[in-house]
Length: 341
Image 1 (tube, helix red, strand yellow):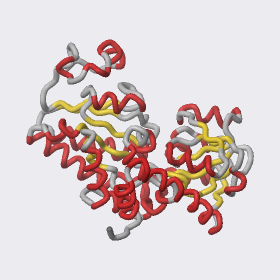
Image 2 (spheres, rainbow, N blue to C red):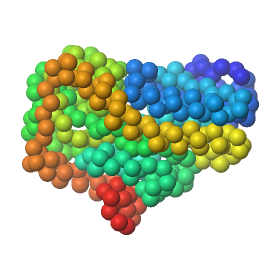
Image 3 (cartoon, rainbow, N blue to C red):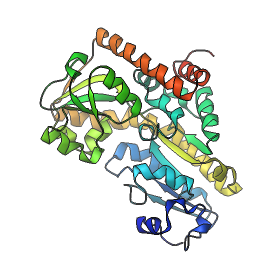
């Protein structure tokens, strides 16, 4: 198999279509190529991804898995195009990055609602009513959502550097690094100036005062050593994400029996273990201790702040329902909250 490189993609073009139409990229039917933009420094999040790839490779009966992390093949904003052009077979992607492409997935980042999904990750496990509702909706766009990792990763909180931000009132007028359209919309409603900055540039942004604070998951904090710049964590669940596993629906449906079984078995393991291990084992044992060692002060929001943010969040929920359709949106939110529909 000719090794895929970014230079090859630039020369051939992401729009070249099926791999058979790109010179020199023929491959065996049992070969699988996957990507993620995350680097190995995101050790907790990569735990489940690495486990999936290991199990997939062992089930391919002599086939081959080529996996590219760190954006070495496709950057974060190129992965969907690479999937659609069949340059890759599967991708792991954080939901916050792709909600503008797939509004269905915006559910997973809705402010305040993410707290419930974090506490009840089983509500988006494979084959649950909510998972199936979202999966079927995405199939209309030829996207097969194989797994959401079995739950959302611990929510993103507000982390501040030079000055304490320990209330909603103190957020007003601040420049805050936010990723995710749903979260940005909510923050704007409370007077924040959202700034979109890649995680790789966030350290310098904090150091130089380009932003006053960041809305981030603890993996981003630790992987980028942001704890060296931060002093406070306002633990209000602003948004969250899943590490989803996606293929093209027709590619998945057309897999031979051996490959299909290998993908399914690896996916079942990933769904049952990834978010569970990250949230319940890796974060408490390896990540939060680093926050404690750095001397970052943890501030819990009071009931008034939670209620005020809930009001803002519901406005974003209503906006999202307008994006996906009232019937679908209402049903999805109800299932996410554990309500009967």
